[in-house]
Length: 114
Length: 111
Image 1 (cartoon, each protein chain N blue to C red):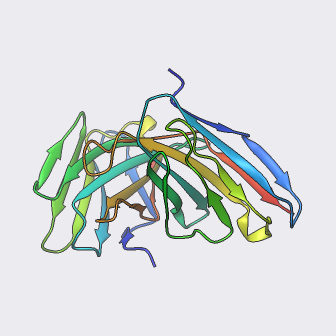
Image 2: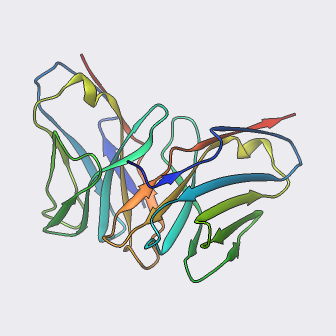
């Protein structure tokens, strides 16, 4: 049981480049979300999904796109990377919100935009 | 802005003593609260949760207290051990399914 798997673990991008951060979970969780973590800022919610085909914006969605075509996968796309997007990104999944919502986090992707 | 915050960014506790980490929230509609532990280089890990219809919940060496009157919750860790060194986050589930995190408190264990 792999839990939540994020790839890549590290990435360096040039300003203006695009890329996709991958997130997959094998627990059949409905709820998935993306957070970014900056020093002194805690975790901030970027986008989330309550099920396949449904996504919604979190606290800091600008510059990011998501899609949820399957229950297992929830990729995060950076359309045109900016230095302000340098951060550690975490993907999380949970069975549901409102119920047993223990969230399981991936190990994170450390992204540097130069 | 964030609706969940912490009173102290860093807490130093003697090994064996009890630790108390505090958290304030501002959204009175929040009905579910969670504490997470994050060790260096790892993702957050669930510790304990509590629903708004409860005042207290206990786990193994951990207790969460919720005071809805003053919108405050706390995490108590009994007999703090070196392995408890980490950053602790409180998070709240608000009405539209978002789970919002506070900034975190770093717990240092003194030998």
